[in-house]
Amino acid sequence: MKKWLCLALAAALLWTCPAMAEESGRGFDNWYEIFVRSYQDSDGDGLGDLNGVLQRLDYIEGLNMTGIWLMPIMPSPSYHKYNVTDYMAVDREYGTVDDFKALAEACHSRGIKVIIDLPVNHTSTEHPWFRAAAEALAAGDDGEEHVGYYHFSQEGGDGMVPLAGTSWFYEERFAGGGMPDLNLDNPAVREAIREILRFWLAECGADGFRLDAVTSFYTGSADENIAFLRWLKEECEAIKPGSFLVGEAWTGMEQIAQYYESGVDAFFLFPASQAEGSIISSIRSKKPAQAYIKAVDKARSAIDGLLAPFLGNHDTGRAVGSLQARSDPAKAKFAEGLLALFGGSSFVYYGEEIGMVGSGDDPNKRLAMYWNDGDMTQQPPGTTNIEYAYPCADEQLADPASLLNYVSAAEGMRLAFPAVAAGKNEWVASDTHTLLMRRFTEEESALVAVNFSAKEALSLEVPGAGYEIAFDLETGEGRAVLEGHSLTLPPYGIAVLMKE
Ligand code: CA
Image (tube, rainbow, N blue to C red; front, side, top):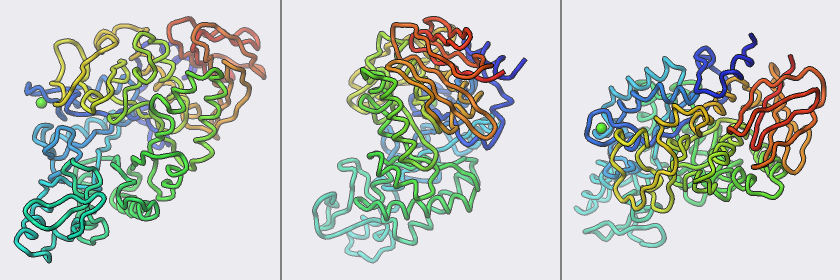
């Protein structure tokens, strides 16, 4: 039996193909973003931790994820840990460095990569560097070495925060957060960062980093940000060739495209995300197929590199809310299908696969993973709204028609057909609600058909002879049927066709 035929038959159920997961150099990944605190508690203190992630690797592998992005795991006084006090340690709440090493090793044995969040635009005001600098300035010593790690000034102004007990100010672009900006031009800071990169990549087994707030490194200067990112990428390559860097440049398409000049592997495709982003708004459009074509064309023509599309993350409203799909699982599924087809490396935020919702205050977007009613972490401090719109993960695992199993199938489609996930794209035909595209690499060519209609089964003409349905990604409204040259897709149906 052909590889893809066996996969098609298994597509309706949670499945994995370990042989494929072990392949390296596929050129793209299926990433899963985890807020460790809210994911899985392993020791009964009510807070998620690294060993909890380790316990859930079967689940993550079952989702067909090939990479995990851990939000910050380093010691920090905040619950979200984006202001770090020690870059070469693991926060006690989450475990130990040895726990991280064990997690990385377990992931690698399953063909899963692990990257960690690296917030080096700023530290915590409680970082020993900042405390040493603040103490020195309070004592009248502005020549102390750590004073040069930050941007201190005796002038106030935009982005400058008074340093208590002194006449000094420090630069902080994330106002009010206890997050002073580092002076990234200081050679001692660069050396410290080099040591941090080496620690995680070479000693701890990390496969790369998610780079926080890259447009704020040198606020207002894209050129300087890009130069710094190039330095980061080169340092990582020297330490561990092939390590993966993905940057957070929360800005428009043209600016994001420019950041690829740094050599950093990818930047999150913010224009495709959230309620107003191109994926969800294409579903809402009166001419959805044309809107999706435009969205994909715009990203693929602007960006010369690996795309990193996503629907939502820890800073945005969750996808089911953005989609207004609290009681419309078919629409939630279809958005995941369009994400999987967009191209490049897809990013799914933990809980998105079970339709978790959350918006407004940040903690609401970072709620406890809903495994079941008994097995959940504490909610993050500051949570103002707790809502779970869809059934828990355990229930969805057991339901072949669940959103969870759809996400698994959509991500599995990407692994089974690398050309579909990240190949070149050619539009073959389209109508208001139907779309036929060809995805191809040197090794593989496939047709992908999409029905954007929420209610109607629609047919489209398949050019050429000898095609078979290789993968049927359906929301539970029926199956794809190919009769001669006529392919009929159920509402929101997606099918991959290959020649015999
Ligand atoms: Ca714990």
